[in-house]
Amino acid sequence: MPVPNQITPDPAVDRNFRSLQDQITALQNTRVNAGEPNLTVIRGRLSTTTPTILHGTGFTVVRNGVGDVTVTFTTAFTGVPAITATGDASETAIYPVPTTTTFRVVTLTSAGAALESTLNFIAIGPA
Image (cartoon, rainbow, N blue to C red; front, side, top):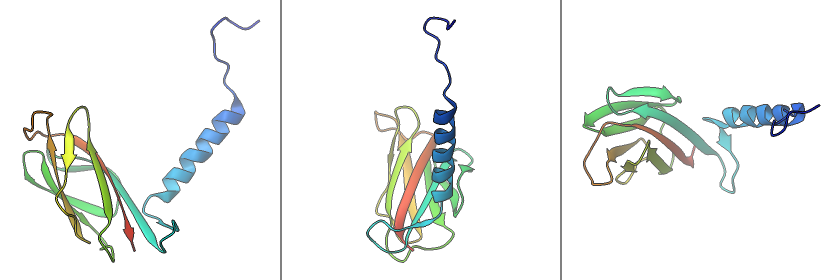
């Protein structure tokens, strides 16, 4: 007899979830056809403190100052990529105009003070 309020795992859901995770992992640093030919996706997670790449490939990172890093792509995009970046917790990640090879991120508190943080980014652009 089932225990009240207990969720019974569904093997089919587990298989579908693992399949979806595998598909997302396969897209990292992969060219995708999304209406514009030969788009490249690069994503990463990094710490601004040391700086350290926590996840991702296809880029390097250098520290410019407190919470301020420059990310350099290993292989340049052929056009300027669209980039989104978010800091953990309540920080804001801002970035001046990116180029085909780099972008700069400064993590800030909600009051506007620079701080060390962990952040995530996604860059999508022409290969």
